[in-house]
Amino acid sequence: MKNKFFGDKFTLRIITVAIFIILALAGLGFSIYLFVIAKNMYMYVVATAFAALSVVSGFFNISASVLYYRSYFYGTYIDNIRKKLKPMKSFPNVGVAVPVYNEDPKVVEDTVVNLKRLDYPKSKIRYYLLDDSTEDSIKMEMKRIAKENNFKYIHRVDRKGFKAGALNNLARKMKEEYIAIFDYDERLTNPNFLKDIIPYFQDPNLSYVQTEKTHRKSNLFADSINIFDGFFFKFIEPARALNNTAIFAGSCGIIRLSALRDIGYFPEYVIEDTFFSFKSDLYNYKSLYVPKVYALGKPIKKFTELVKQQWRYNYGDTQFLKYFFKNRKDMKGSPISSMDYLTHGFGLNYISVILIMFTIVSIFIVFSAVPFVNLNVHQIFNVRYVGLDLEVFGSIALILSFLAPVIMTKIYFNSVKKGFMLFALNFALAFARTKAAIAAILKKNPGVHWNRNNESEGNKLVFSVMNTKTELAFATFIFALSFFAAKTNHISGGLWLMVYGFLYLFTTVFLYKYG
Image 1: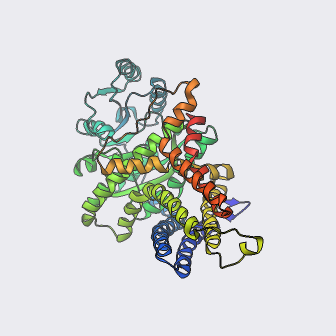
Image 2 (image 1 turned 60 degrees about the horizontal axis):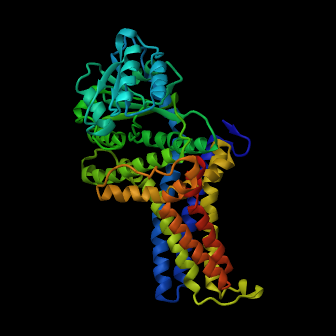
Image 3 (image 1 turned 180 degrees about the horizontal axis):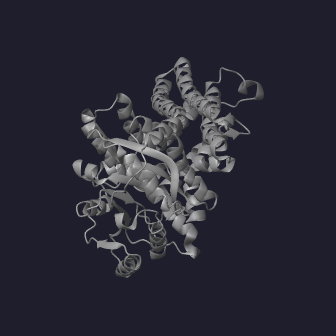
């Protein structure tokens, strides 16, 4: 593949690695600079805090660069495996499962009808609709959909274990050798899914195969969100698969039922897929990733949907960290395998908490030169005015963190707008993700509950404001500090903080604009 701006695939990987290394070195370099110019305890505390954040950030940036670089070689790896596969003389029995919970019947019906197009011996395939719905009208519709499309309808009353519980309930009863899972909104686009993927299970130690997941195209907001998954499935998942730590992503994949039963079924957490992947590794099974799209999910058009998704991911990842540290001693893989799961568990926590902490440290940096002095043009460029120097460095760091997603989305997805959207979304989601992690630590309810009393069109602004009070309060606080800095002729610091304030306003803006 050639890119008219950046050259071939390998060059793209090198550019990506360079971006992450520059970010890591810039943070560490600024940390050293802070220690060099520190003259009092206040500045040493600021320098120490920034250094700690830079080390963590640098670790994740370097880890990401390694993953992006290694993903380049996955194409050759999977091709070599594919070449060794023998033609299938007969096909095993497969159960195709669609878990649902109070979903839109029209969307579910579209999924069910499309799955019937799977090209596979009819006598070897059986379809299941796993309905955990609690609303009577929806349950009636699900029964109708299942009956009209020859799906076996299975309904649970208590929803114990969420999606994992529904799948475990099926796995204990079904007689098929493999279970293929699709989400309620995934429309089949390639009917060869089973015939393409089942042959990989010629390896008797293979536990599951995951394929690439993506969503149907929509507006700028939805397509930008899709890039979140795009980066994971195009770069992180292939690199992990080289270490035998490919994550089962919950759908668009196939699991060997005997392996699932051997490891004790799906761990019943809100992100059962990550736990299952790790547990499969603990039992020394192999996993595989096939970078090919077979179904398209429904695009996420509402900010509320995205927040709920990210809340669930971060809540589950935080639970997983505890599970990982408790069981990692039993892992039989290399230290790199452990690192893969560690970075996965900390991933969204890192993105959200680090953003907030960098913002707070930036505030302390701006006010490191208190009391402020009136600066003339000559004094502005005088190195004696440490506060200004710090803001210049800090502003450069902020610009670099902005340019990274913009450059990468331009390289891989040919869109600057989506890069800016990704940057804004990370700030918009920072507090929601952090709250989810705290809720998991405190073992609170694993769901975000926004007040929907003011959601009507006439109260759209009220609804947006009422449900983003934390972000608005934080942004207002930063704006107040920005104003105070500007009033005392600390213009550069004031501008720097004002940018942060606007970034945290994106939570309210996105909720108001996209609902």
